[in-house]
Amino acid sequence: MLRLYYDLLSQPSRAVYIFMKKAKIPFKEMPVALRKGEHRTEEFAAINPFQLVPVIDDNGFKLTESIAILRYLHRQFNVADHWYPKDSRIQARVDEYLEWQHINTRVNGSMFFQHKFLLPKMFGREVNTRKVEEYQNKLETTLHQFETVWLKDRPFIAGDQLTIADLLAACELEQPSMADYDVREGRPLLTAWFNRVKEALQPEYDEAHNVVYIIRNKSGGKVSGAKL
Amino acid sequence: MKLYYNLLSQPSRAVYIFLKTNDIQFESCHLNLLEGEHRTEEFAAINPFQLVPVIDDNGFKLTESIAILRYLHRQFNVADHWYPKDSRIQARVDEYLEWQHINTRVNGSMFFQHKFLLPKMFGREVNTRKVEEYQNKLETTLHQFETVWLKDRPFIAGDQLTIADLLAACELEQPSMADYDVREGRPLLTAWFNRVKEALQPEYDEAHNVVYIIRNKSGGKVSGAKL
Image (cartoon, rainbow over all chains, first blue to last red):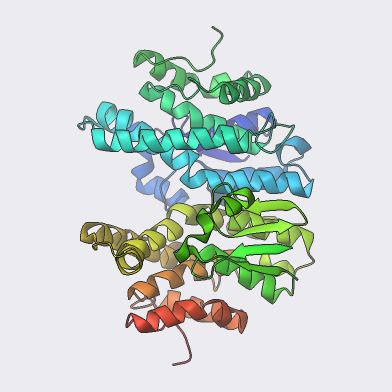
């Protein structure tokens, strides 16, 4: 059976987890506790030399990188067309977002979260206020571009239907909520899109984000979308 | 189809070489980045992110070099080796294309920017801390390139050249303009580099002409021209 090595604190892990559950792809759950350093073991390095999650092991074939994994799963299993449409131009728009997001949504959301929450609260380091400000500004630029370019005149990133682009984006945009930052505040287009995506992916979405919601509540953060 | 590009940009070179080697017809729309032609309102209408490369296929505009390569592969009848149908080989290509964003690309680019582009082109002072930081990161990337991506195989995804190799080669030419030879002390990488360039001539040298000129001017070492 296909194995998924993951940690639900990791945005790309959540995206792959939700996809596999939603598409009913059977897999063996292999949780890797990042906060305990389980990814830094020699045992895990044998599975992924880069020592990151998520990773899949499909009967000996190991694959890293969440987007490569999603593409592979899409090919190997009979999933609905909307996830990654055959229509070449719609598919191109999905691809375009998946490329753009690496050094925009992902890096800015992650680095903001790391400097404001993870490094101080988890590892006891001092808050680097300069870095927090830098990445908050970059994150806000990303959110502005998200509304004005990616969601311009359409309900989902690539058009009328939810794709893996929306799945990945939503998972990334949940991360800042653990650092007491609500990406939806003052952004009605993004809020409407977020609700659309979450609704389409329940109950798997809330299940995958349970630890995120817990941490968000503990740090006094605002809840991004649980039934208010 | 129009291609908006500049050959100082690594992803522009990759798309340019792909179009040329596959005999895909396109109209060249070269943008002078040093003169800020990408910062005009005119170009913002083509790409709101104001970056190259971009294609305009009869009104359908597409940014992001890898998205463009995927689209071209679908739309035109190119040879299978570029992006093999074999699911596991294709997965290895995809895996590299994802990994390279914050490894090969960012470290190569940022090293080049801090050591060469910002000082020499824009007259800024060299930020030696940043140059050292990115040189170290680049060297980690090069080590991983040899020990993971080229482990036991001639090309990134296996036995044949794919778009992963094309993109990687274009990215790894960039540091040469900042007087840094990625091949030095790295025989596996050197052998791979020669293999890739050979398979892509004469389009490879044509696309890299400006890179070679700048490298020679800054006293850099020539990464692979016939020595």
